[in-house]
Length: 342
Picture 1 (cartoon, helix red, strand yellow):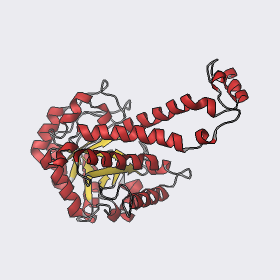
Picture 2 (tube, one colour; picture 1 turned 45 degrees about the vertical axis):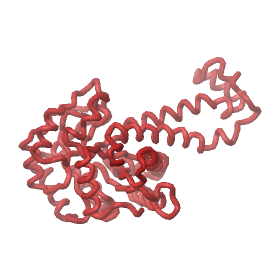
Picture 3 (cartoon, rainbow, N blue to C red; picture 1 turned 120 degrees about the horizontal axis):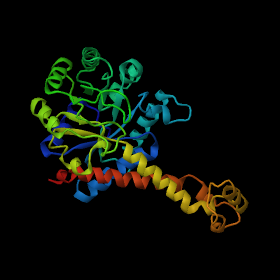
């Protein structure tokens, strides 16, 4: 089906998820392989539960200083070009005879700073299902003012997510104090956003043994504002706590770091396993001499010349794709997509 970008239809998807107690993972991507893997995971989950139109949220950042994904999509680093390519890929993947055509796909723009991403936020408003207007690095009142201005400008056209308080980078300098209930109430009332991002102790690109997710605070905020929260910094939540995030009030849950780790490691394993078919024997010996490979690497040579099927990109693409797809399926399972079978 066409991408789900109509404001009312998007709100209905979130309402359905909240009523079912499902968490909607927001899987971030910065390449076509990951984008397709996200859709493939939703398709696989749908096949398991007998429902082929499950919702799925592929997302990306633009110029976000933490990781500007649309500046990484192409070698030229143009975020406008990157955004157009991602949108065109999604349009193609959800149309015609595409195997992903029956999914409900809700593209999301993540961590859009209005002072650096304003052009993309305005030019592509109607192409996204939701946009995170992230002014959280500013003082609270300035954050409210900037977020409210954007929400008012696009009201009824796109679901707006706003960050009550800044979610810090792992290892960074600064406070990491949980958002208070009063802050959450005030932010929501003064901005009228659809979804809020509270700080509940998590950090971006952290590990669960470094920080502490404050589930009690999340439930307190949810009791005050409803199940309209988005979790950022999911990589710092202990695995045992992940299934409870929907009950804590999170209808939307961001996931990225673990996808990149699993995909990158899968590619590395593939290269190591096939390296004898990627170099000539003399090249392997040079790599051994440079101490980049072990002494037995040259003995793994199985042909006189590199094999085209191995050195070309598709096998590495498939290694990344498979690992990311499977990791996405893990999260769809943890966040209760089985309930869409009801």
